[in-house]
Structures are given as C-alpha cells and as structure tokens.
View 1 (cartoon, rainbow, N blue to C red):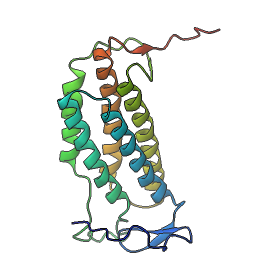
View 2 (spheres, rainbow, N blue to C red; view 1 turned 180 degrees about the horizontal axis):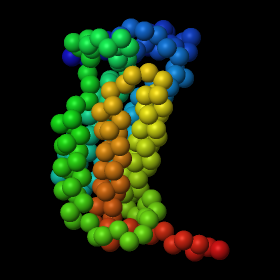
View 3 (cartoon, rainbow, N blue to C red; view 1 turned 60 degrees about the vertical axis):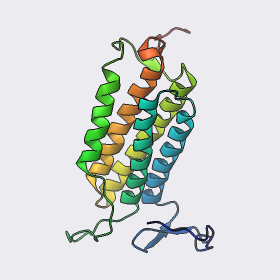
Length: 191
C-alpha cells in the first residue's frame, strides 16, 4: 500500500528524483521522461473520461488508467543488469494486462465502420481527447524504446504502450458514432 504523508520533501530541488530502488537520477533522464509521458497519457485519458457517456468504454479506460500506473512503476524500477532476478517488490507489466487491452480493442473495433482514409484527430470532445492521449502514448512508447536501447527494461511495458495507443485510436473512432462521424483526411485539399 502506498502511503504519502508529505508531498514536498525538497530532495528534488537539485534536479534529481528517486527511483523505486532508491537510486537518484536526473529529472531529465530518459527513464524519468518515459514514465513522465506515461503519466501525461494517463492524465489526458482522465480528461477524455469526462466526455465519455458509455459505462463499458469508461470501464475500459479506467482499467487502462490503473495499468498505466503499473507501467510507470515498471519503468521507474530499473531491472538488474547482471541477469539477476528482480526484487520481490518490483511491479512489472504482464501479458494478461496486454491480452485484456486486446480483447477490449477487439470489442470496440467490431462496431466500427471500415477505415477507408486516414482520420484527423477530432469529431466529438471525447474523441479529440482520446486522439490526444493516443499521440502522447506513442511518445511514451518511443521514449521507452529509446530507454530500452540504453539499459534493460521490461519489453512488455513497451508492448503495453503500443497496444494502448492502438486502443485509444479505436476508442476515438468508436466515440465518433462508430466511425461514421470521423473527420477524414483529404490529401491536398487546400492546395
């Protein structure tokens, strides 16, 4: 159980932050930027949920928000470099979390009109926020991939972020009247 009694500690005033293993790193490190992008994704999903009037989709998004905290914890916990096992307390994304997102994605995708053009982010307020969350999730994924080239991380965290961005795209279309109200890209329209 997480217990936060005091929000400010002054330990980060020097531009560093503590990882879950107690190690201090720059707030500008690739690891901190990666889990910061995950946090930003989560926040925008929270904004999107203010515009979602469907209990099923809201439940899916709620589960993703919770999982994104797991992704953040995973990325904030360095993996051992020497092949040693993780500490018992290390929280890692697992395949069943990815499987659930895929099932939810398939559920929404089954209702959608076929895609015959790229779509512009927008349409309904919920869709616009879901598209924004999708783009931030893609950035989080890119940062996690960059981090993975420097040091070992759980590859399932990257897979999860990839699947969530796919889910957010489908959810955005779903909230645009099952894709019927998508804003279509018209190549060269304003030439």
